[in-house]
Amino acid sequence: IPFKFAPIIFSFLLSVMMSCVVSGVSTYSAIGISQVFFDSWMSSWLKSWVVAFPTILFIAPLTKKLVERLTLPPSDRAIFFYDAFEKA
Image 1 (cartoon, helix red, strand yellow):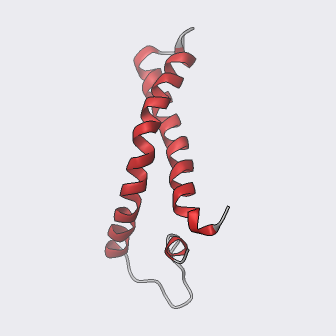
Image 2 (tube, rainbow, N blue to C red):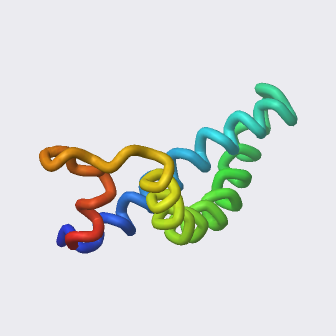
């Protein structure tokens, strides 16, 4: 996969993992462990991921800019993690 797709891959993987964890915790809080837990969790996860993926695509660049404003500039040798995405 060409490096220029790194921001999309990052957003995809982050959205899959985070929406899975959050929907699992929410489902557990709502119904506990039961025979329908897994089916309910997967249904909730899919709905959450459909929202999470495009949200992260939009929010990640804004978050990067906010973090850059809130932190000290990097030294000459330091590379900010998301700078690699801009070079693609």
